[in-house]
Length: 154
Image (cartoon, rainbow, N blue to C red; front, side):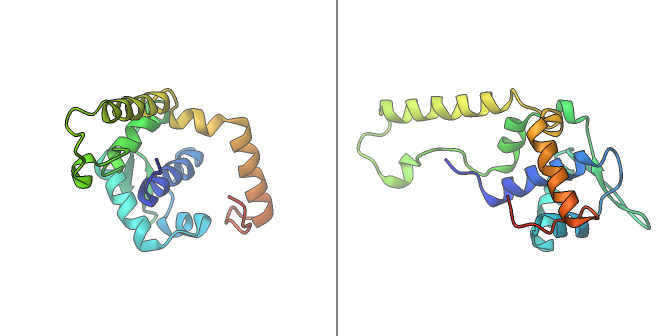
């Protein structure tokens, strides 16, 4: 299973904004940091705001901040909210003769639910305090000098 680019960007945006400790972030700085198209980022932040994960502030000094406590943002829930389809196999589209009584489909569905359950054991807050993640932030910030990503790792 592979998550969509949209979900990947959503998680990166939440990590970036969560790391700022309440400081208002602009889409331009997030786009530059992660080398994400501003147009893709606009769609992602709009969806995250609609879901309550982000809050936007208009006007001068406007931008985005977290819309909820990072400890309440479960990674599995974020994925469920941003992915269109988490089915491992689309049996209907394949016109499979084993469907609808296929035990493989049930096993794959059970695996998908276990995947989300495992990710729901992790919150955005957990990611933000992770030692390895903090070390990577330091490397990126050091390389850029101002927090704008300049390296090609990750």
